[in-house]
Length: 60
Image: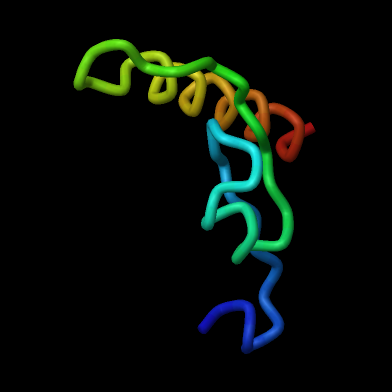
């Protein structure tokens, strides 16, 4: 819906070629590696760091 309205959309994903990355058109790939356990702690921590870095970039 947002893409159809002309909004800029980017996905933050751990897997290159995932559906979110394809649908968004742009992607920030974390490359955190596969998760061994059920909880996605590596991907979550990587997303938090990536969003903080993006925030620093946009605020300067």
